[in-house]
Length: 163
Image 1 (tube, rainbow, N blue to C red):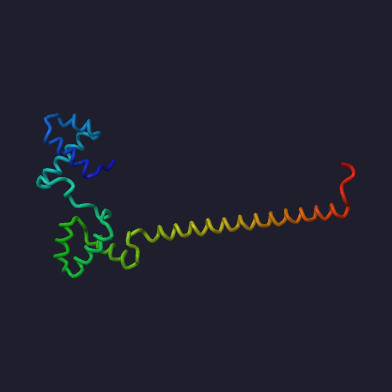
Image 2: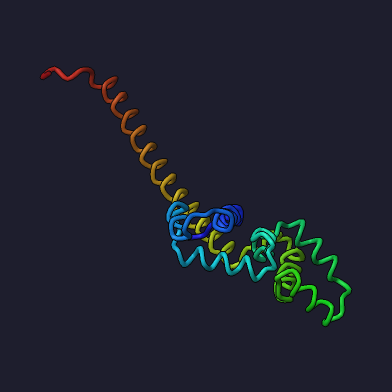
């Protein structure tokens, strides 16, 4: 289960400021005691910074932030780039992926294979719908032809006298 950083910050602050046992705080928050211990150790290791100050994952970066990162790192030498990436919590391959996505006009970085698979699925659905439409058109044409023949037969021979 994934918790928001705001929720983590709230629980950590409560655990640090309250006189209640940590097991009780964890139970009230609906998390395990070991999870609370992990969050507290992360908080202490981060230099008493709130957990929300920890860098976000690469997939959490917005397209504008990605573009700004690419612009900022565009002319950096490899050592400076590596230091910048460490500071931001990224790897250089993330920047490469973002650059390729931007150049292929795919700003969200979604997989091209998934796009092709979706396109194929839509094409097959379209083909099936066209086939069904042709079948229904033929059935409608047959029904209307039978109706016309029935009317002509009625005009030629008149009403059926047995009925």
